[in-house]
Image (tube, rainbow, N blue to C red; front, side, top):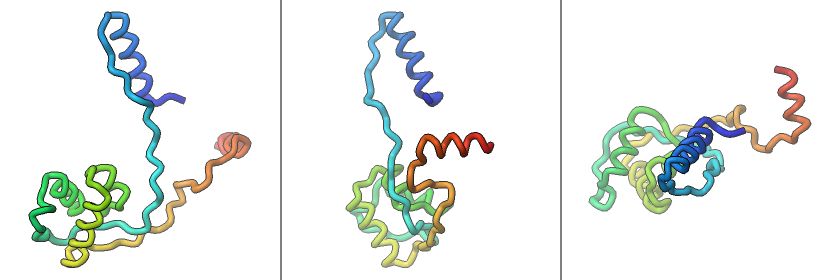
Length: 127
């Protein structure tokens, strides 16, 4: 089933094509299959960072971390920091003891194994 975004994008392409406008084609987006993180981080205090870590991406990330806990997968996706940069930032925050490390429970909403078609039909029939 197509998402609303995909439907609107298809409609816009058709409208632009019929109007003679060029449309840039983007590759199909796959949902990110990030592994479930076992910990999240929440900023308790603003640290003094080394100059190599003082940039807008880090400050935006820490702003979010000061409001709510976030896991490493979310940080990588949203901040667009390189994994090495993010690991260095987390190490700095942990070393300075300005971050709270929160153990995450296993999420019952995330199904680790994709369901087969008969299992989906049974689950759908129950609702």
